[in-house]
Amino acid sequence: MKPSIPKGTRDFSPVEMSKRNYIFNTIREVYSLYGFEQIETPAMENLSTLMGKYGEEGDKLLFKIQNSGDYFRGISDEELLSRDALHLAGRFCEKGLRYDLTVPFARYVVMHRDDLTLPFRRYQIQPVWRADRPQRGRYREFYQCDADIVGSDSLLNEVELMQIVDTVFTRLGVRVCIKINNRKILTGIAEMIGQAEKIVDITVAIDKLDKIGLDGVNAELEAAGLPADAIESLQPIIGLNGTNSEKLQTIRTLLNGSTIGLKGIEETEFILNTLEGLSLKNQVETDLTLARGLNYYTGAIFEVKALDVEMGSITGGGRYDNLTGIFGMPGLSGVGISFGADRIYDVLNQLDLYPASALTRPQVLFVNFGNAEVQYLLPVVARLRHNGVRAELYPDAAKMKRQMSYANARQIPYVVLAGETEMQQGMVTLKNMNTGEQTLVDKDTFTL
Image (tube, rainbow, N blue to C red; front, side):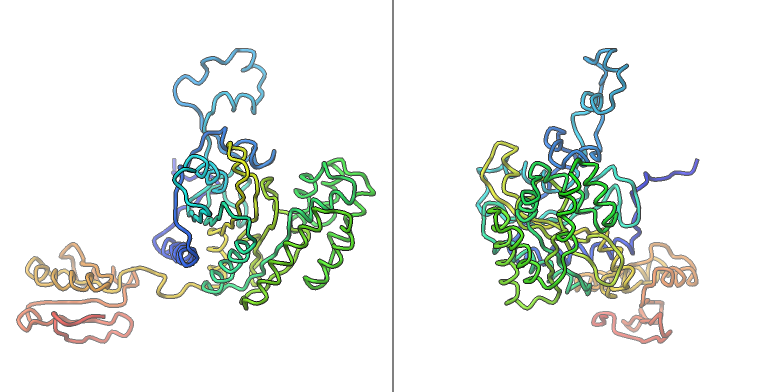
């Protein structure tokens, strides 16, 4: 039987890994510029850490890890015969693969609180897993590249995260639109239509506008139990147009009686006004339909869309005021963003934006004619590597044609040859594989 891999996962070739590392390194360099330090957390967490943090839909998408040993011990026949999948999963499984990097980060902060200097700025680049239906741009195993700041309420943190987004995509050469909203505004809207208790249902439905359209959103709102007049009241807000300031002015009028809604408008205006003086290369747009489905957001929320490719969100994030409270550490505010490396990878592939320097294949191959020639060339290979040149020595004294075919297949631009004549002269022959030109050079001084 031919081997395969699970749906929603992928193998990556050396060329693909070079491209992916170009993305990771770009993000890592920008994070470091802004004072963030790297941590890592385990691939699996206790289910008690993960469950209940992502809403009902998120809980269903958690990959659960079956207990080792006799996992039937302590489970009654009645429980087994009930065929209650969720209940049995809770009995069979104590651990799960992490769904994102934010909840494990909150757990990390609480566990290591005595060792952290606040505000704590961390970044984390690791894979996460979701039992989602695989489709274009959506995978079951994918990487997130997160940066979070905890222990500070300042909106300057939100401003810096937007600068990071702008810098990363400018370096990658991708034109994007940074969309911004505030959960407090959405809460104010829910109050305004008399459905404050339905805030989660409202935000989950509105957040799907791009995917299922206005009719689909309205159908979800109706299914969630919102009355027709409340759904009707939401229509002008969902369809709001104009400049950032015009949108906020319109919503300010609508939310005039909502203290929390007006607070959200004030926070959004501060972020937008501060960014105006920073000359970002990419556009920032207020989008009052942006909801970010995760339950833990409480303030500003962000999402980034590529302008030249049809693709879902490629970066997202927001402010959360009470995430660590669920682990016994209330009152610690945080804000973060997450770059979707896999979607960014797809965007760069479609736009062919990888620089030649991103590919880390060898720059030069040394041909192997036999033991004497190898001993002559080994110091040259070592010197080039010491100077940062990616060099490879063919391991076997194979036929010349085979070694040249190997260089062509690997797209190695230069080949070095040394036979008896070159060895007598203290020289090597450098061949340009693109032009076929050959040059005799001093083995002790030549470089690429």
